[in-house]
Length: 168
Image (spheres, rainbow, N blue to C red):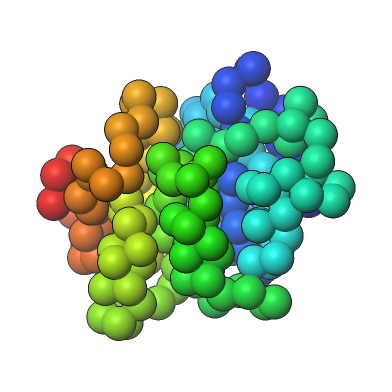
């Protein structure tokens, strides 16, 4: 797992197996001026271990609960949709904010992610402005997932200056 230092704020967890995508995301993250620390895990099993505090992630002080999970769908060992389903089935994680960040714009993936209560679905790569909106979104008080609808839609979130955040 890769960690970037932070300011005492809750981390954002990036679940991504492609090192090039992690590099691009880190650069955009820094450009966006996000002060939350960034934690990165490389597969679905590792994501579940982090979120449920298992194995090397058992120390909740060193590996605190993230305020936001950025979840790729195409992951080794356990898919992003499987990770999302595990999260939503766990009462202790029911209010966790999940944003899908993937290269897949397939309608079935989008629909399934929203069925599993993802708060947003973004197609890579995210623009700096989109990351800034994510940071603001992550800092909001969390309501119950059951009360929230999707807050972003798949579309041209990056080319026209709009981010798609806010009620869909």
